[in-house]
Structure formats: structure tokens, C-alpha cells
Length: 176
Image (cartoon, rainbow, N blue to C red; front, side, top):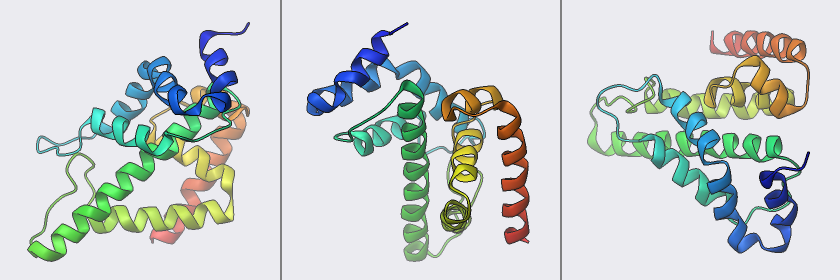
């Protein structure tokens, strides 16, 4: 069955200037859920709100071409949201250096230093095993379940479960 979302994706490369907004509108509910899932750990002093994450991710997606499926679009959007969060952490770290006071990265429970270190570590993970990184992005940053991750990545739940455990062990080993 060919859905409205599939039709938008099919025509995306032909009209990429206008369709980025249509994709975000079509997937708005799913994208809000992804952004909100990452923010569940938010503290009372938030500065990066759910819609901020979504809007900044939209700016990163604007002009991108060639989404093959709804799952591919959601995976790319999830990656864009991770980049927004890490970029936010880098900005906070720069502010911290100037202010010389210990601030928490609002809404994420990690310090800016920790988020930048996590971003670098995830880059190493992606070089080691790209699928593990996609699973970490989907499970940790997007808050997807094993079943949702499997559907988005087009792999079995068993593979997601095994790779999630392996990626967590790999990360834990490097985090000490």
C-alpha cells in the first residue's frame, strides 16, 4: 500500500525546496515523539525545548535529497536531532569557558563536556560499526523501542537487541 507519506518521499527529489516542509508536516507526529523521547530526562531549567530540537533538525534536513522510505527519513531526522543536541552541548561548553561556572546542559542531564565527549565517542563507534551507531541513535537519542528501531532500520528485533548490547558494551569499555 502506497501512503501519502510514501508519495511525498517519491516526489522529494523533484521539488526539494518545497517538500522538506511537507515531509516535516507529514511526519510531524513521529518527529515530535522522537524529540520528546530524548527530552524525557529534562530538568526544570530547560533551555532546549522539544520544538527547538525539531525545528533545528528541520533546518539540517532542508534541501536533503533521496529519502528511500519513511523509515529512512525518520532515521535521517533522528541523526539530525542528535546533531542538534550535540551542537547545543558544544555551544554550552563554549559559554561555560567564557563564564567559568559549572552549568548543566539544560534538559539532558549531562555536562557540555560530557555531551561533546559522547559526540566524539559516537563518531568512533560509527567508524567501528555504522549499524551500531544507527541503533544507538534510534534507541538513545530518538527513544525508539526495539521493534520501532528494527522497523526503521529494516533489520530484525533480535539483531537490534544483540547490536544494542554490543554497542553498549563497546561504549562502556571506552567510557571506563
